[in-house]
Image 1: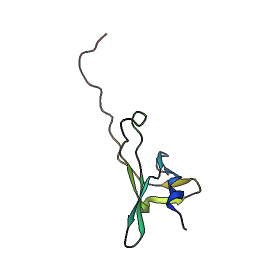
Image 2: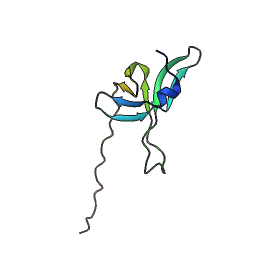
Image 3: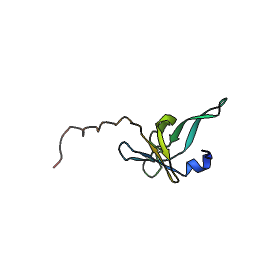
Image 4: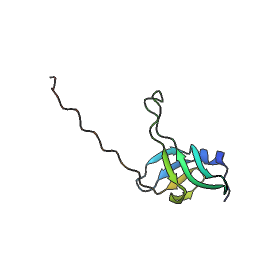
Length: 94
């Protein structure tokens, strides 16, 4: 199967483990001498309408890709979940 990078950039990446939509492919990790693609890189979600940059990017190894369709790429990869921070304790204002 041959794919151009511009075709991959238009595809949305979906994790079949939890059904999460990660975004569209932003970059590829390639071994130069062999010309082998080792991973997809998906940029993180924008923070506050993109004014404060983006979240952490997703690095998806090529072995985690299960299927490449016409408009989506299905992967199976577990990402570490961040724990929700407890609200700050202090005086309550009523």
